[in-house]
Amino acid sequence: MLDTNIVLDLWLFEDPATKPLRAALQQGLISHLATDSMREELARVLTYPHLVKRMAKSDIQAQDILKRFDEHHVAAEPAAKAPCTCTDPDDQKFIDLAVAHAAPLISKDAAILCMKKRLSQSGVVLNPTDIPTL
Image (cartoon, rainbow, N blue to C red; front, side, top):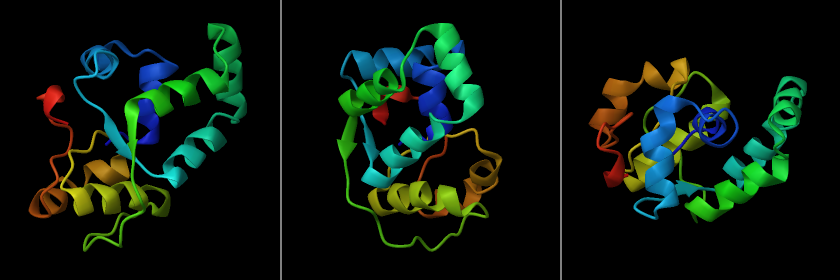
């Protein structure tokens, strides 16, 4: 699973740290779980003025990023509330889905990073180093 900031790092900012992840996604070695609400969040975030400015500078349209998201995700239904709660309600959906599927979660969000131990106890690997096993 990829949180929204990682999706932006992949397809808008092209962060060099995401190069192995991007390659694995593009080669079809992995995909990521996502719900409709996760896609809706991405679409909403792509309207933020600073991101609109960045997209214009990079000659990328919001629909290009959403298309890449669509190409590389596996649709999932929203999950029931996980036993661990994130301090950021917007991030809870990522926690819930990761726990429900015991899926690795890639995030750099502080509200998620501080949950590493609790997520591990729920069967979720946070920021795995072995990208192809996502």
